[in-house]
Length: 267
Image (tube, rainbow, N blue to C red; front, side, top):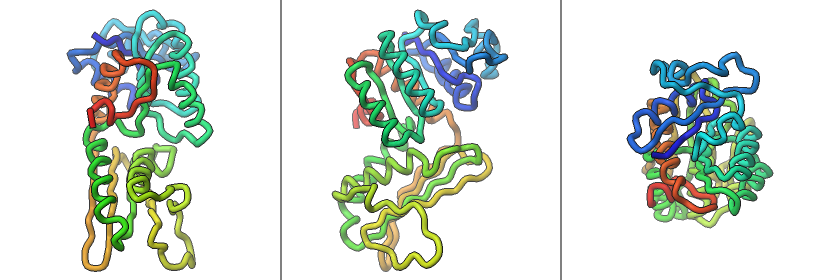
């Protein structure tokens, strides 16, 4: 049984992760962490997740549960995640990271731990999304340089703080790499006013933030006379949580390195 601890256990994703661990026969919930000084410290993690008592008390630091877990799951914020990554490296733990919004410097810092800790880092843990990425690579190679305009459209709930989503950016990166393009050079994240005609090599991004949308992503390949759309829609955070637990069980038996969900799923 893989002993899993969850950071941000009182949040929306944290509570879903607790449920996912409880549904997985190969994992056991070993700990949950809330913010330092939180009034929820000491509360039963199962009760926080609406499952009833599980006999696991929420801690307000990783130090308090360092001997209890094998793999940490972190869907928090960039600086928090990097601090937790350093903790795992120092204490011989493994980590699954679903945090998005890391900038280039933070990604470089994360990469610096690749030889110190086994980690799975992915902007989206969904099995379906990672299959979609594989389909996008195939579509881009077949269509992208044949006069097809490429646009990435994503929608999430009103509480999401980063834009575009990490998944949308990953989709753009997969398409750009398949076409031999640099997303930093050809990605277009804003069109306002007299912006002129579309450059054929652009990869455009459009973002929606509204209501309680869990996550929707569409990549459009459009040319004169036809349009191909590859879409993934998530209706529950459980799809991400189950993927994260699957990744935790997988990375528990891996050596140091940075892995992605493609590695976990054998894609």
